[in-house]
Amino acid sequence: AGPPIDAAHVPKKLWRHSSMDVCANLEAKNESKVLVLYTGGTIGMMRNENGALVPMANALERMIRKAIHLHDEKYATARFGAGNTHKAPLALPSLGPDAKRILYTIYEYEPLLDSSNMTMDDWINIAKDLRRSYELFDGFVILHGTDTLSYTASALSFMLENLGKTVIVTGSQIPIFEIRSDGRDNFLGALIVAGSYCIPEVCVFFNHKLYRGNRTVKRSNGSLDAFDSPNLPSLAHFGIDVHVEYRSVFRPVTIDRFRVHSILNRNVCLLRLFPSITIQTVRALLHPPIEGIVMQTYGSGNIPSNRLDLIDELRRATQKGVLIINTTQCCHGAVQAIYETGAALLEAGVIPGADMTPEAALTKLSYVLSKDEWDLDTKRQMMMTNLRGELTLPHTTLVKEMELIEALARSLHLSSSEEMDQLKDVLFPSLICSAVKTEDLSKLESLEKYGANLSASDSDGRTPLHVAAGEGRLSVVEFLLGRGASVHSRDRLGNTPLMSAVSGDHQEVISVLVQCGAHLTNGPHTIGEMLCSSAAKGNVKRLTSLMKAGADLNQPDVSNRTALHLAVHHKQDSCVTFLLKNKVLIDKKDDFGL
Ligand code: ASN
Image 1 (cartoon, rainbow, N blue to C red):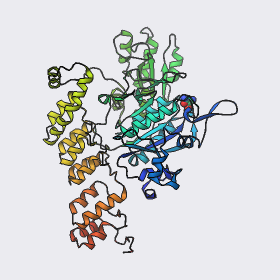
Image 2 (spheres, rainbow, N blue to C red):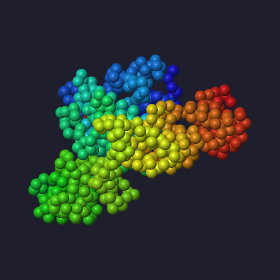
Image 3 (tube, rainbow, N blue to C red):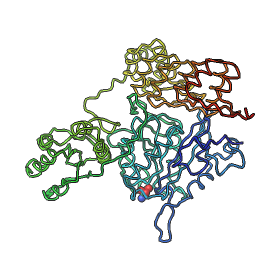
Image 4 (tube, rainbow, N blue to C red):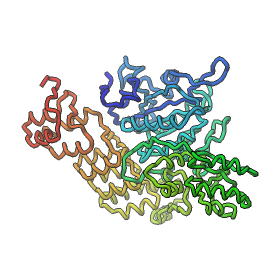
């Protein structure tokens, strides 16, 4: 028999077929759940009667169900029941005895689009669908055409505020239905990253590499290596082994929950300078309703210094409140005011765009301009601030090595950086764990400076945040959240840091985690059972913890008994009073009609 389907548990608009309901409501322990939003692109295209590639509706999932590298029919049948196969979630084949099994479900957009046909409205729809499904899945894959993929990935990186889960955008250069296709590997890699790694960014996975989405540009329409990240090395590389550069992962550092900013300002444009560009052309572009322009200038941000007409025109526009961002036409490198020809722009009020790609600068501008709560000065400031890892600030130095570890390495005669990394992997977790337990924030700070990953998990999948939450160390919890620790990582038993805090009844910790977007991930009946057993034992404290963590006090157990049934049956007056005070339903019937 398949798992219970609780239709009330899933948001209405996005859900259309039952594999999504099943996947969303699964109680996943050694499994992780990925939602695939399939928007279109070559990956799912076929040739029409004229030989042109067009998106093909209702074909991709059918094909994937038959692909043995993408779907393990045997596992799915054992997990979801034999009669259920076409409605059940898809299951990736096992990635190894210690790896979580990745279950996924595909939501196909209608109509499927060639990404050249996509607009800002499509970005907003994707962002809203992520909001609707955010709490029900562990990670997300967006299947997308490659032509405007970097625009979508950049825009989403800004619109998804305080993102705590992995979002991977991918597609392919050759349709997945063809014998030779990069679609299979790209899709598989994207699913593996979304289901197995906590990289809380909008990333692009293509040709065995994982990039920060807002750093990518489409560099080729013929090569399978279609994307490049000219100013930031890839975040991960899939070779014989998977190598993730954790130190480069950009993590949210505010104690705030995930939010979607679903408004964009469309009065933006790109202006690529060329020798002898006429002032009329520039004037036409700077005309209202334009509110922001991304200029692509020469070299390190230069314009002709003898074009006073141009500089005056730009100055007039910035004085009227138009935001003008200076980026370079070079594929690689940043805007720097090192020439006289660039300094004039600064003086005219043009904002230096550092090393942002045109796609990132344009979508960031559209996002920043749509923020009504920011005044013009804040908007200017934000364009220069590193919001999602989209630009490199000058003078950021990373202290990479720890002297202590170096000394140890010397005494062990270690020489290669691989051996150093192995030594750190062994030493850091125990040093971090002891610092968490003794609430030694300065030790944690120096460990981080020396390259320790404060989000790394131990062999049981527990992160420093699990330990701090379970021990009730509020200051450490706040410290770790401020350093980008994920509230969503789940240990081997499927528990998040929030559940660790509930198990210890650390209610202040629970509140901070919830404020940061944590939510209960256990299935509804497991929560029901926890509520019922707490009520039966008269444990008001645990009921309060569960309530603070977001549990519905009316949630029944498998026999449809609620906490109130148990509290009354076991004569736990304090629990009855507590439950009634919190307005639980008093007429719910269990399976025995009581
Ligand atoms: N034209 C296609 C698209 O962007 C290109 C691709 O996906 N490879 O949808």
